Amino acid sequence: MSGRTRAPEPVLVVGGGPVGLTVANLLAARGVRVVLVERNASTSDEAKAISLDDESLRTLQAADLADKVLEIVVPGTGTRYYDRRGRVLFHAQGPEPYRLGYPFKNQFAQPELERVLLDSLKSRPEAEVRFSTELVSVAEDAGGATAGLRATGAGAAETAEELRVSWVLACDGGRSTVRELRGIDMTGTSHQVVWLVADTTGDHHDERFGMHRGTPDRPTVIVPGRNGRCRYEFLLHPGEGEKGVSPGFETVRRLVAPYRSLTEDQVERCTTYTFNAVIADRWRDGRCLLLGDAAHMMPPFAGQGLNSGVRDAANVAWKIDEVWHGRAGHGLLDTYEAERRPHATAMVRFSERLGDIVMTTARRRALARDVAARALLLTPPGRRFLTEMRFRPRARHTAGLVFGDHPLTGTQLSQPRVLVPPSLRPRRLDDVLGHGLALLGVDVPDAAWQRLGSGPWRDATWPIRRIDVFLGDRLPRPAPGRHAVADADGRLEEALAAARNRFVLVKPDRYIAAVMGPDELASVGAALRARLTGP
Image (cartoon, rainbow, N blue to C red; front, side, top):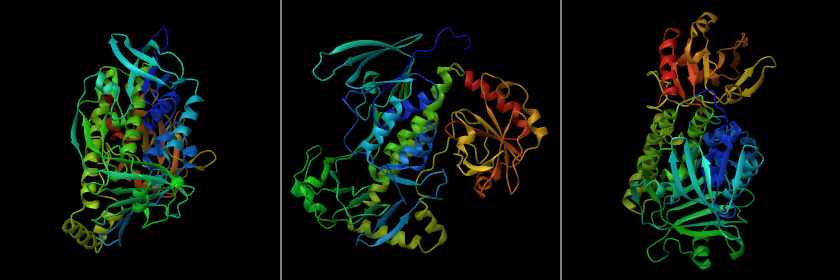
């Protein structure tokens, strides 16, 4: 893997939506050359996705984009659920404010998000962006892949080109060309219930939370945005509309009337849709990997479609980086599906169940839902289950790049504020972790660090950042060759108390690969080396 005579070919990202733009920015920020192609002439002008969670903002932080995106979002406070009679049931705000360093749920307009991501990508010398360009073929050989591209600029003749690339990342949506070219099917369910979505302006709603109104006669979702924008979604009755056919303004005005008056020029976008709950049968085919809707599609009720795609991007980007720079073998990319598929599948199923319960049209089911929710709210565990959204599947890597069975292994490390010497100014933890693998010594003595031995712990091929973690009310003391952080507010101790006197190996997507004592360093190091250099 070493001794390359020339830089690898660029990575081809197919699709210029939020997932494609995110993974392209993450790769370029790591010094990987990227070519992004999008068949449309520009980014989307339609506000499709509207919810960005704290994990997605943390991912964007890795590309220095989080602060820019925060300027266009509403720092949200979760979702408020209403019962069958329009009364408040409960407000779900997540397990802990700013657990990952950002608000739990944030409303945004997709066109604005895409513009921020695109402007950033265009500013990076490692990236090339081509609109009005579509992928038509992919052929592989031992050294890489050849992508057939067709450019169709406005008023210009079509031009064909063959581009040599190292990897192809399919971020081209539910009707993925890459997935079709590779003959990959999707398994799941297509739902036939028709919903109407209308994005409006001049709205009076100023709530910083989404509203799910579970009235059986007309289940409704309302999500306020910035600057008077608001999204309304309504379940349509038979005969009121069909998929893909834009309803007339009078239909929109009638449905929105209980909540506000509306003029035709205040409707930014209005369409009808049905939804799918499907998973691609495989996520990697040779040098092609599927991300986002190309790999999985889910109902919108949990607000996790885009966020699941951003999780894919976070998982893939650092692994492509390692392989592209020659620090790891191609087999590392097989851990992508192993780590991401279980949670994506669980989220698809959860989104279906949530829609069946919260947006039901059956009056008896709505009554049972409301009675059950109010009963749960009477007990502290039940109240936490609902208000902290403990009913939502939590991501945990149980296969892939994970070693051992410590309770923290496979979970995502939170992002508390930490004190960093010499200034001791509080900083987000990820700013100290860096782009690569990080080895945290949680209250371990210097003698334990001396047991790192050989292998990846000291091999310059894998520059693993070493960090002393000081818990409790103690000052951090950096040692030669190591960084140091201390607890700023007790959150670091909450996150790592279970790993005291142990080492914690953190992956670049901030999931924990291993928790080990000093006597386990050699065996985990050997397993890590084998996984990184495997076929």
